[in-house]
Length: 285
Image (cartoon, rainbow, N blue to C red; front, top):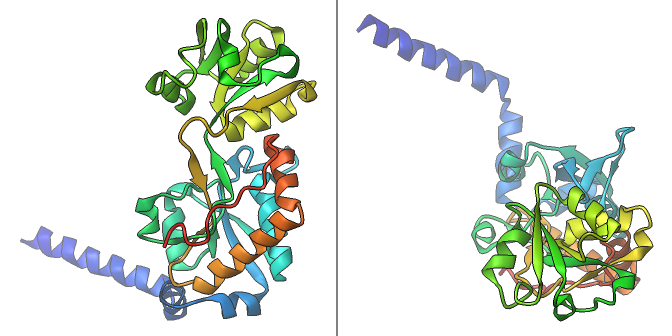
């Protein structure tokens, strides 16, 4: 009995310590962020707090000197410029991203974040600005312009990847054409074989395929095919449900960047893809 009372007392003490560490102002700010439209506060502050995983190539990652770069870094900076805000990037535990958003630690999740119906029940999304399916990376001089042109040729796949799964799950898309396939533990090895001519193409995620193809030695020698053939993951900005104004502002800025060519430039720079696609405004309502 005494041991039980001691455990209860310890629990109460722990609760008291935690409550003292978290100030009423912080609790109130967290509640306010989750329960009201924060655009006025964001505009007054002059910064947009952007939650990122800073190791996610090519969306957000750090160079050797520590500088944060990537597709989403460029895009979010461009959006902030349109809105008259300064981006403030915060590296977060990716497993805690939704909690960080709910608590007001960040204003948005902007890091190759896939919009799904399940997530849409808990938060709002901007327009989809990138669709990440699977693409076939080939040499430009190979005369391959479609999946059908892989007839009698050899494709490389990474073991356990979405590309590997989709290749077998949807055999009518590509599998029926190829003569053979080589399975790799990583995409780097597959790209080395592609460069050496030991295989004719690498099926991989469009985002990664575009980045690797763009940054391979002699990258002008490569191109991507069929990014819309396999099912697409739809990438958007994650925003709190109550932040309706912020959703509208980001959507407005994305449209501006589509019109002035910035979105297309960012896609070419990081993914090697000539597109300025934006999804419907009301896709996740």
